Structure formats: C-alpha cells, structure tokens
Image (tube, rainbow, N blue to C red):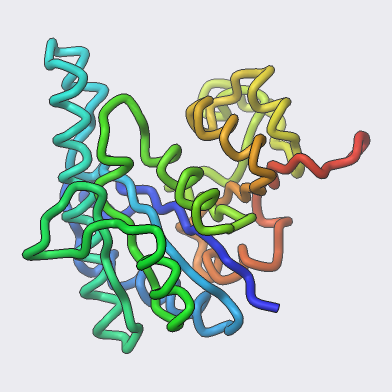
Length: 242
C-alpha cells in the first residue's frame, strides 16, 4: 500500500550556516536526503517549503509594512526556494514538478488539484510554492491544506534544529519536557509553539498526523516516514497515558 506524505521543509534550513539566502551546498544535501526518502518506494511525495531564509514577514510587519504586502513577498520567496530544490532533485534523477498558487507560467505550473494528483500517480515529486496564494496564512497551513486536498494522512514537519514539541521553550527552560506523542487538541489547548493554530485545526478536523523532527540530523528525513521515535507525533489517535 502506498503512503501519501507531505514534507514541510523549513526555509531557514536552506540557508545552512549562512542563515540568509540559499546555500546551494545545503540545498543539495537536503535534496539527497529527500531522494533517500523517495527511494524507499511506495511513497507519493509532495513538498511545501517555507521562506524564512529569504524573507521574514513578521519582522517587516513589526517595522510598519502592510500585512498583505509582507505575506505576498513571502509567497514569492517560497517559489524561489521551490525552484532551487527542484533543480537539485532533478540533477539527482528525480522526476519533479513545481506548482505554485500564484500563477507564474514561465517558471512553474499553476496549482490544480487534479493535475497534482496526476503527477503523484506518475511517481513524480511535487513541490508547492507560493503558499495558499492569499495573505494571512502560513506555509504550515499550506501543508495542512494540501494534505487534506490530496488525501495525505501524514505531514513530516522538518524543523531547523528543533527535535520535537516541548511543553515550553527549551532555549529558555533547560528542564523543558519533550513530548513523544500528543494530540492535536492538546496542541490547540496549550497553544504550543509548533505551528499556527489554523494548521493544527485543519489537521485535527481531517485526521492528518504530524511528525515534528529535526531535519539537520543526517538520515532523519528518510527515517521519519517509518520511525516516529525521532520526534513528536501529533495525532487524533493517541491513547491516554502514551
């Protein structure tokens, strides 16, 4: 039985040690890890990538920029990251398509649900750029929405240096507890800083599991498909006491 998985990549991770911009060596490393995941077989894989390495909309808003303008600029930045990742994957021999919610036909296909499903059925990796195409939504929400639309029941949320969900910020609290498993409702009730609440709600309502893990550990992207112990599993189907 094939697994349909959405991989949500941190944009900041594409910058590598530079922390800003696109580090092509780092992108190539990530692409190689993604290929290892894809080569496991029986996986329909799509990818949503963030933009934190190029554009931090929150900082722009705090400095006085209009929220809609800041969000649209972020959407464009995700398309740059998607194209860079596509190029690296194709050089590794992966048949890949980039689809964008903002129509830029010269560089990528517009997102059409049935076309995306057709690509997946033809064993192609699909990269989604441009977020949802409208402001006030994050790329976390894009990952949740695309998962619901395409029938995926697992989001691999690859974080940049964060190995799971904690009860408080581990950078501020050395005694912070990492959850091995937690429900969507607990994420919502406790306002845990793992994704925006819209994305968490959408995943809860559509019974989409989420694995939060550190993508900077070599081999973790491929391991995440089958080994949930490397991070925190968020699911509606967790029994109490787990």
